[in-house]
Length: 324
Image 1: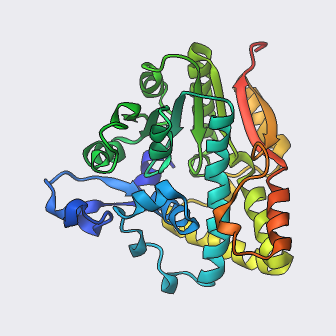
Image 2: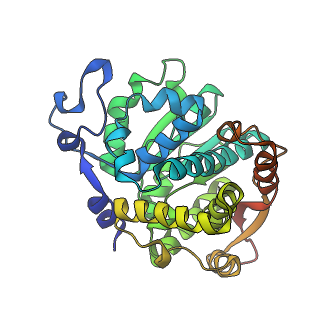
């Protein structure tokens, strides 16, 4: 299945769905007759981040009518699914931001950015940000993002049309960066076939060869992070139930079977990356003990378990292998 086919299956136009609630009390349907689509999974992720209390997500989500998608009556075990997804999504999102901060990167390229609040996070820190996605998504972002990105931050934020599997588009999206680039990705890899994943890695290698920097992600071990947090909260048996319900929810939204796209072992993923002329360094998810908002109401034991889990080497720092 092509990447455009994936998006065409799991996306609907904002004119038909009212996917975004309106700016200034107006809906997208009241705007000019542009047709566009945003992935169902993108606002769902934003929804969980806002529920977790991520400030820029709370600020952003007010413009997105995610409640049309994430409804308790649509999800079995909703309260448990919400609880673990808030934790998982916050850890995944915040660990990348923590890396950017700890390594003092001033250039960030966000692959398949959708409606990620990272554009606000980096802009507030004076970090140059380019969010890449498909044309329809970028068209919407370019029209509406200026409504919630303040004037003094706009110079730091850009959205570029770039299919992660398209070399020319990827290189063009990165061309204006001055200095090394931190390329980040969360929530895209699992929707790509092996051939598309290979093309994405080859394109990342070309960008890093030209500009320097690294590609940072936890997506190759996303299942491990999710289940580790899940088991901490619910125990082995119930974690499997909640995990299956969550997977079913996302597969129904995207029409992608994750068992076909996720790697079975870390060794398999590492070989795949190395075959693309890259190398991997694994680090703890956070540089120190994080302040994870979504676990503040857990008991002391579970908070410690989650914090201990974040010390595992589950963040993958991927760079060019100059020996290949």
